[in-house]
Length: 190
Image (spheres, rainbow, N blue to C red):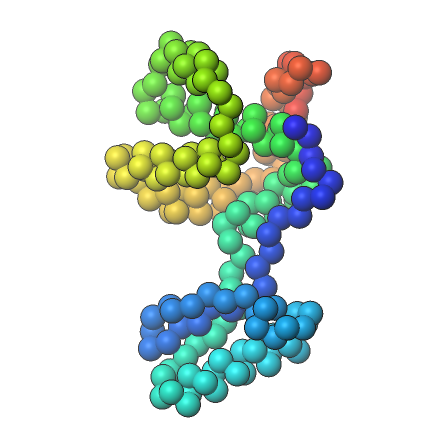
């Protein structure tokens, strides 16, 4: 479960189209142009969208799409701990589990409840990664709603906070144990 050398995080090259003040479309510009995306090609696509909207008599705003939350988090992890750590699946799952347990603890879940849940989960067959990611996202959204929290706002606030504390976070992470079969208890990164 180490870093996959063939993995590259998804990168958006696209535009958001807002017509009459309402966001109606996020589009990838590469498939539209049929050519490798260059600033010149992107400018042609944006020009075409603006003129089509003008022809239809609609005020349109075309702007470059903002990188997704996932892309921005990946960039932060890579900057803070290095690309290897950003792609190390074992390290990422340990950090995710740690944060999940800290959230459960903050909401009053006891250690004995956690241990019962661990035994229950590991008594069943292993799930499919994509489906389990979806399940984690759905249950986090439901948990946020039940606690009157915005998942999006909390995520953006935390990313903004960690972006200002890279050196402090690096030092803290270097002191954390890793829980791998080949390095149980050794300090780990990010």
